[in-house]
Image (cartoon, rainbow over all chains, first blue to last red; front, side, top):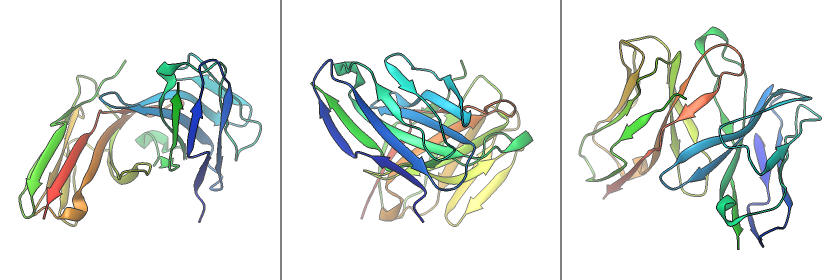
Length: 116
Length: 112
């Protein structure tokens, strides 16, 4: 059972470099999202998608781009890395919980990014 | 913006002790989820509560959703070293994307 797969697990960048964090899920979930986790800040939503071809901004979208060409994949692009983007990034997928609110979020193992 | 405050942020207890973690907001949520996260891994769902006043039990863990659906608590009875981890509460609403708002988390250490 693969679930949500994120790559790479670790990455070191220099300021100004760009990179893409990959995320793939095999559960046919309609919703996918990217979070960053920082000490004392909790998990904050960067971007999310409610289906292929549909994306929207979350709480902290600046400096990041996303696209969703297939149900399975939801890559996160850092356009010009800054030290403030040093963080642990989590991709998550979920189904709609309907009237009861969000369904269970299934998270990847995380990608630890350091920007020097 | 809906905010969730968790307390305490850090808790270090001896094996066998009881503890309670609180999650509070000024906003009403359709549902409240509790996740546990271990080092180097993503959070994993423990429970979802959806009805005001609802109580759910998961072995030694008891979860309660406040009557007004603005707060929740997690009580652990006779904590074990295996309970060590980061506990996150997350509030959500129905409709649209159903965004989830996370609390900062409570880092629990259970000492053998």
